[in-house]
Image (cartoon, rainbow over all chains, first blue to last red; front, side):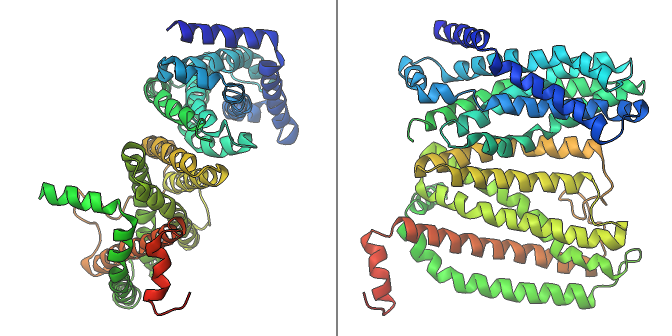
Length: 222
Length: 253
């Protein structure tokens, strides 16, 4: 357990000392969202309709960008071997890594989203839905993504491959989250969608660390 | 019975045994696929009555539905073989999983393509963002992911294992994707065949469809066996029994 705590502490410290790692995806998030009014239509009524979807797609892409580095340095500098030799449960380690990833990517995205909501003329009623959906949905992205990151950690040009593997699996999260924001915007209930996101989070938190742990072990035989 | 199954399972682990036993099956499987395909298509295209709403355009169902069913089964097969490989480290299972992936993707493509052709006269457009089309498209993406991952990893064992893990994660995801997409948007006609309900089709239309489904499964099995045999020959190419094969066929070394 102490190893898990130490890993979380080390990763947070690394992120604090090297802010580019988590700031760059945030800037990317901002820029991608800014492209839509420029490319499609700056009419506020139209923007209000697509705001939820655009913000969510951008959040998803920003998450993918930062996932690539999740296990790369651990595999390259031998930390992974030390983990395996320590006998500590890989399940917990994988869970901890996903948690740190969420703290450095999902959480800042959630905090920044209201600003983007203003840019996208998001309806007043939809702000809570957007923040809630991001709060519950982005951990699922981190957890599912950690499996892909573990699978591609030792592969050259793994970043693109990672997106190929993981994007189809992100679809359910995207559907429910975007629909929650959209329905809140037109004044309807969105409890159901948030509930589904919560169910996905529970399922992902239980199962994905197993897959990530199994995938991490493969990096030794390469 | 159980003892027999266990023995069969142990035997399946031997590439040589698999290669030899399937040599005799290829002819029969080919025969059944050809006969079934001809019978099913002739019955379906010439003798089945035209649909009262869709006219003759519904006849593409005889390709579309079997391809879609097999494409989904193939993913299950890939995941089950992957699980067998991960748990019991059976090489044969990994080779089967690798043989299945491109086949499943091909059937997926066939289903999507015939669906587009069918959609044009029925819905007036090649593609709609309908739930079942979308989940089929995502299934194709999952296949692409597995194939890309298997190709990207150089070490053989790691690439088999990575493919197996990804297909297992995919299998857990497929129902979630399917139902979320269905909830999101549906326009597609409901499934023609359901195991739990009486079919909604006239028997003259139904029989050719059932024949085509069985035939497509047989054809799929034939393809899996042929591709697995190729994998076996490649991986065991340095073994004595493979090197003797050309001599048994009367060739010279």
